Length: 206
Image 1 (cartoon, one colour):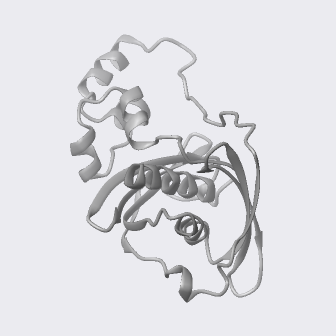
Image 2: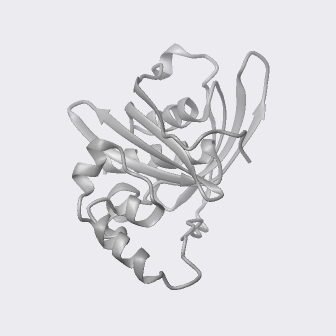
């Protein structure tokens, strides 16, 4: 799925995307359909009961719910906020599903651009929105889509790495004076960052 890479968390800070008015490429086409919404979430479970030593380790890592589940630390700022949370509370807090990316497909174009086809629920009540947009990446495409629907999100910190056969993205975001952490899981990097931005938009705008 991905090119070989080491297991270290990649981190980029102060990522800013152009406003909607500044890029002619990011002109999106929207199609609305009644939402036949079905969950696309994936729950990872351990097939066998944890041995005694693993149970002790889980209790030791309880202050970091992500580390307790996947063995990797949350970003520092998020780790402080989420300290002691149960996994269910962590997901409900940082990955709300009011805006859900049901599908995402990318086609490479010239000059580093990509054509994206997305299906998103939650942008409009009771409707599934089909989007066609050309952009330099999934993050800028999703940012543009959210802005078009009155949910602007600016990324201040970005952390992404692989877990099992999926990708997780943590972002620290801002809109005006409001700031929040959000998380997104996906089958690949594009789906993961799009999911994280949907979570952030929900947290920032309600």
